[in-house]
Length: 198
Image (cartoon, rainbow, N blue to C red; front, side):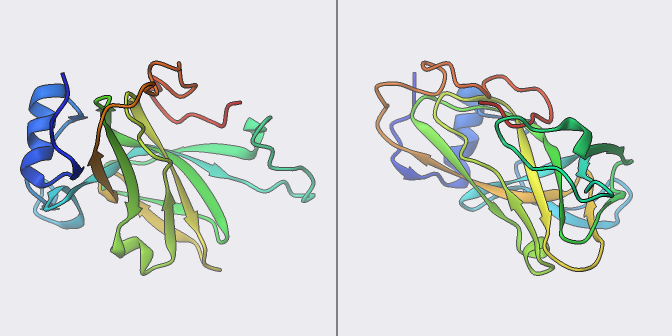
């Protein structure tokens, strides 16, 4: 069963989709601006027309080979170009200048077959030239999001674990003939950071 809503979903519509379809878990019904110790954080949680998700504690950071040889090939990605870094909650991961990291969302998703999500960056990071890239959460897709975080600056950049990283906007429409699940999408059911697949 899917919703009869059409267009960009509001906070109460998103909440209903969470209750009826478990579209997002965990779900925080308000914007959280402080951690458990009362310290300010980059916000996450429900907003008027979207939901701000958090980045986890594991980062896979791109490390350029010393000899500058090699190629970034999305069809045959070399895992040796990434090093894994674990940080404590609310601590920072440093992303090198002009480099990127892969990370994962703390939230999991179960998209109804007539709802698609689009991710956009949070202004706190965007104003520091730290760009987040996430492909659409297609209708019928389930899993944990893999997040690409790009440091566009010439200096190391901090990204804070367990804090807000980007906002998801949810759009409802008519049911498609074929959902992501129906066609057996290659990223269906991913549980952590997932490298490119073909």
